[in-house]
Image (cartoon, rainbow, N blue to C red):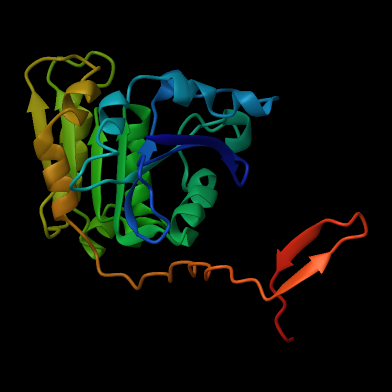
Length: 263
């Protein structure tokens, strides 16, 4: 797996690519939203510190193990929530994520039919936000894990854009009550979406069930069984083989083979 930490707009982010990434192919993309434990008050002062809390965190380790999957390799884009850049709003917002949405949509190697949104705890709440805001039309599947409640989301967008949702929560979660997931899924299903949103309530695991969820084969089978039909952006042209036409001699006597074409 290849990793890059960079600014997307002003949003510090980590991007994970398959080891054998090929710019001549298109890949599914999973937007991963972290929890409260990784947010920061202010942006990093040094390049080496960009999105470091996300990069160092092991919460999405089992998700990253699947990036190089032989059958369905994919890319993970993991933004870092910086409160001062988010107007000190203590949670994910559509406005904050907008540069990340644009990055995903504008990258030629993104398979626009397969954009997934996954997240845990505060990021699970962020999954509902991304799936009901300006990005909703592009979401082909969504998995909120022990998600925080979102009261201002327009859940009719999930029906409008036929977004499959599979939520997970543990019955013994004492940090974020599973009643929030029950209420969110019931709210979504009150609009009668196709497919109907579903949830899995685990008997144990407390708040920290994401390792379990991201480790399940059936989660990825479900994720990749859902797609959209969106016009794809063209891939960048593959550079033609370099064929020199001339040999030039420099002042120092050395030579260089170059190609000169008419204007």
